[in-house]
Every structure is written in C-alpha cells, then in structure tokens.
Image (cartoon, rainbow over all chains, first blue to last red; front, side):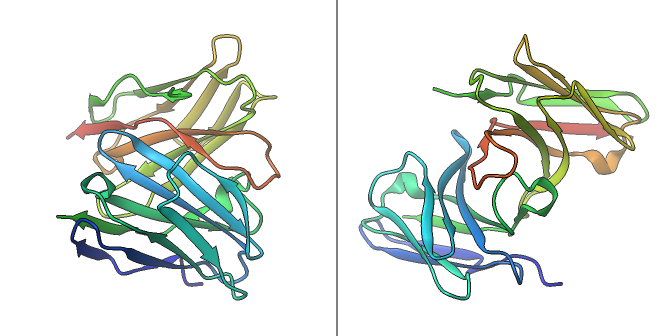
Length: 115
Length: 114
C-alpha cells in the first residue's frame, strides 16, 4: 500500500510570506500528526488531527495551524514566516494515534527554507 | 524543558560489536517508549517499542531495556552492521491506545565502521 505522501518535498519562501504543506495519509488511517525537525530542537510535536478535529496541540505559536479534510488528508499552514521556521516538517499517520507504534508511519517530510 | 533526552549526540562503533544508545526521561506519566531510526532525507521509521509494564523487549538484533526507577532506557544493537548507521531517536508517549503525541529525544547519530 502507498505510504504517507508529503508535498512538496522542498520549498523556499521569503520571510513574512505564508506557506501551506500537504500530507496524504495511508489509506484508512484517520489520525494525522505533524512534527517539526530542526538541528537545535530535534523533533517537536505540532498538532494531531483525528476525524477532522484537532485532538492534540504542541507548544507552537498561533502562526502554525492545520486542518484535516473528510478524506483524512491534512494541511498545515505557517503564516508570517520567520527565519527560524526553516525546518523539516514531518507528517505521520496511523489508525488511531501514536500508541499504535508499528502503524505510526512517517512521511519523508517537506524541507522548508525561509530566506 | 526537555522531557526526553539523548545525551550522546554521536556514537561510533566497529562492525560486529555492540552499539548501546541511551535515553533518559523526566515525565513519570510516560508509559510507552519507542525507538525510531532515521536516514537523511527520509522520515523516521519505527524500530522497537516497550511498554512500562516490561523491562525488556527484543526483536532480532535489537533489544530495548527500560529502567523505570532510573527513568532510563537503552537500545542495544548486536551485532552492529554498517547499514545501521543512521540517527536514532527515542520517543515517549502517555497511553498506548490513545491518540497522543510522541515526545522525542534529540537523537544520536550512530556510525558503524566496517
């Protein structure tokens, strides 16, 4: 079966712009989580969506938002980009949540560079 | 405040020897722990996990040990192979069946020399 698909793979944006990243989960998976990976902070949880509802939220400013559609595809949006938002953004999907260890599958990520 | 810490940013091991990667946590509410392996330009892939009701879980060359009193877990890879060279992340969560987030450590880069 197809894995978790994230688009685009690479993105360069200018400070102050906004960006939208997309994640298509594995077919049948209803939970989609987003993580930010930076060299200094490691992998940090952004938010989780389940059945179109945000179920968990990490400690990020309101500039970071997301949504999930009825087909479980998810998007995350970052407004008013800052240089520090440059990171690898990873999406993970599962049937129900992070506790389903083997079924919690990550995509390859979107590398965002803010200049 | 980092709730999950991997204090060794890198580890170099000879092929065939044992690799031991360590992880410490501070939140006593964590009850499920996972190890992920990550290659550059790829997402993390699940390696092995352990519930807080156990102190050891083994899967082939990989064994995870959990010491709850010390809030410490370790991943043993025996024997180490060059293909094991990657960044290893430990992660923790509260609740095996709930839709909870993973809290990751900062990662340890393992280099296995032929």
